[in-house]
Amino acid sequence: MVDPRHLWKADERIKQARDEHRAAQLDDQKRCWEKVPGLEELDKTIQRTVSQALAAALRKGTDPGAAVEAARRENLAAQKKRLELLERAGIDPDTLETTPYCPLCKDTGNVNGRICGCVIGLCAKENLAELGAVLDLEQMDFSNVSLEWYSTAFDPDYGMSSREAAQTVLEVCKGYAGQFPDYPCGNLFLYGGTGLGKTFFSGCIAKEVAQKGCWTVYATAGELFAHYEAVKFGRDGSGESQRQVERYQRCDLLVLDDLGSEMVTPFVQSAFYQLLNERMNRRLHTVISSNLTMDDVRARYSLQVASRLEGEYHALPFFGKDIRLQRREKGLR
Ligand SMILES: [Zn+2]
Image (cartoon, rainbow, N blue to C red; front, top):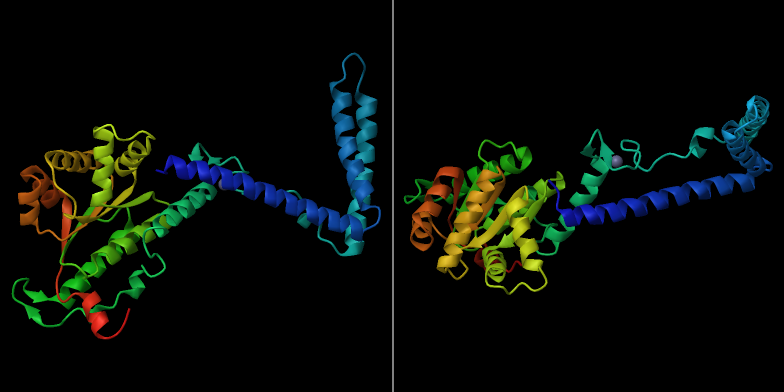
């Protein structure tokens, strides 16, 4: 699925790309006309005779045969002469053919009733630009994950070291993004303390999934619920919050960051449950990151929310020592 706004922007861009493509072709033609004397006249003759033949064939009342034949002969002679001129000048005639910007859809944007890859690619660009405005996408890449920040010391609470846990989380997240939307588990719940890489990992997923052309939306819990509240309590004069809510409900992947940082009200509790249900029913995928454990979720939202998360989400723990603190101690950014 694509965001209607991305599609609209993609449409603008494709029109612009087509115009630029056509202008470049006209430039090529002009350069050849300057280089090869007589070529311009021949090209115009070819064009003129095509229209003459067409006009003659459509003329009513008279037998068009002779006029069409004359135009055809003039056209063929001009074409032959043109090829000779081009050959003598060492120009490949194919390079002067007018071709569509996208050979797959011939610039219609559709192939067999489905949106063409050229449009999807442009939508993906819009999507990445949008994500890039709130996430450091340049850094957010699985290849930049360094497991050295996670300790090898055994943690009895988890029955493993934080490095072992991070290694597993990394593999799952990579698989999830790489195979999206076909990874065996459709939803992830990344939980643990601050500064352990939850936002970084979810950002890596968001980027890779958006690059594939799947519609990806990133939001913090605070902003997401603020839009729900604006719609519910009539504070959405411009309709922007309604549009945001629709994005949260319809996008292929929703990355909901920092769950638990927002103010919880009965309205937020029910909006969250509805959102989870809505996305589940539409078979859409969600990645949630949170400082909360499942016990906290149960206490903070509702049993229903907790049972949804437990039943439908693959929970991935983050623990160890705050990486931001470790970096600061080492004098790194
Ligand atoms: Zn196309």
